[in-house]
Structure formats: C-alpha cells, structure tokens
Length: 138
Length: 180
Image (tube, rainbow over all chains, first blue to last red; front, side, top):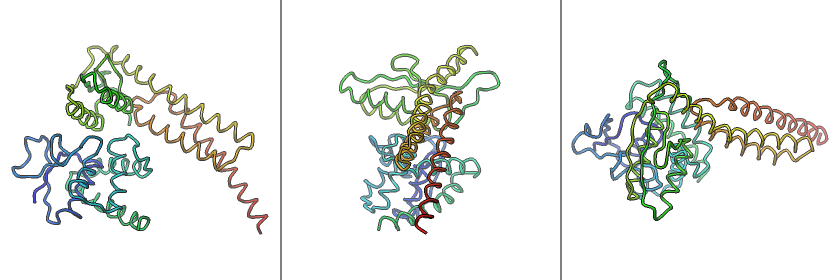
C-alpha cells in the first residue's frame, strides 16, 4: 500500500513510518511531499491536516494510529507517550525519554539527506526502544 | 533552539491570528495555554507571534487546525517587522518574558542550597533539584533569543548538582567504611 506524508519528518512522523512498517503493512511504500497537493493519487495520507490518520483533539498522529488500528500492545502504548511528549511538548506524560529522542532525531534530520534515509535510521531507534521497553513491561 | 537575527537585523516571524467563540471557554483557555507553553507573545488579543522555524511552524499549524475544529477562525502569517527598531523591541520583549522563569529557577536553586547547608536530606533535595531542572529545560526550549539569565540559571543548577552529588558520595564512602 502507498502511504504519504509531509517532508521533514520529526518524531511523530518517523514513529508512524516505523509503526506502519512493523505493525500495519509490511509491504508499505512511502512518499514524502512538500505540499499536500503533490500527494500521489490513492495514497493514504498521515500526519497531514484533515487526514483520517492525523492529530485528533489532544492526540498526536501516532496515538491516532494506535486507536484506529486497535493496537493494544502495552509497549506501543508506552512509546506513544514518549512520542506525544516529544511532538506536542506539553509534558502530558512527563516521559524523560522524549527530550533525548527529540534531540537525536532533530540532529539526524540535519545530517541525513532525505526522509527515506532518515526513516531507515529511525526505524532502528524505534526497534531498540521497543525491545528495551519490552524487557521492562513484560 | 536559538534564532539568528538575520544580517539585516530582522527576524522572520509567524503570526497566528485567531478568534474563538466566547463559550465554551475551555477552548480559549487551551489555546492560550498552548501558546504560553510555546513561549509565544501576544501582540494584541487574538494575535500571537513566534520566531519562524520548522518547529514553531509545525506547532502553530496544528494549533490552527485545533482552533478551526473548535469552531473558531485562524490564519497563520509570515511577517517581517517594518523597521529594525520594531524587530529589536519584539526580540527584547521575548527575552524579557523568559527572565521571570529563569529567575524562579535561580531562586529555587538558592532555596535548595540553603536547605543543604542546614543538613537537609540529600535524596529529597536531589529530587527537588530534578524538578527545577525540568522547569529549566521547558524554559530553555522556548527561549528563542538567549535571555541573559539563561547562563546564570544553568550555572546555578550545575553548581547545586555538584554540591549535592559530592555530599552524597562522601556519605556513601562513610557508609561503606562503617559497613566494612
């Protein structure tokens, strides 16, 4: 399936890309656009104003994905708290990991050439976070 | 994140102009809180400014969407002040807005140092210090123009941590000696 979002991914979008690849669509293909008008036809848009899979009320897009796809994994719930705090900067969950993740991904944006490369690298970060939190949660 | 005042002496700003229905008031309060958390400055009622960068732009775009969802109207604008003097005044207003927060951090650290001098329990003092460090980070995140008090607050926090940690290890050594 073809998925599309805005260019210049930060924590919420990189986390969504990882979530889609690992938990929703193993065959996912991604397109990153500058303006929503450039989005390829038939693509499922996410983290874009007005899209089904986007910010909803107080939730960031990652949280919306979990609710829409009924992903009730407790480790994903923890990651969603970290992503929420990093994305919305409202300290809702007081997760200390958020500040570090925010700094790391912001820096990776600066050194990596584009979003496909960035998300390949951030996949490894979220894999690590998931494995680490699994040991604590389960 | 620090914003460069460009070579022409002017910053590029984002201005959110919005209006929300008077009732229910919770949306107005939520928007006001979010703007305050971002460190935005109200130019007047319903018109808030932030220096432009990728993060402030994204945050304001989402806020714009939320205002519309709540039945309000919001438009987001890029702006350059007309004169260098106007720009300077705005930058100074932003710096001034952060002084209060940093001042509180410095006061909090002094309180902890006094308690430590009086032999306060270190674990709880370290916890109190961690809380103030979180406040400092929140303040720093919205300190776009490096308020002068930032360095002072950061140094006060570092010094307090050094003192408390130093004391802790002295106690640990003592416990270890007695235990051995």
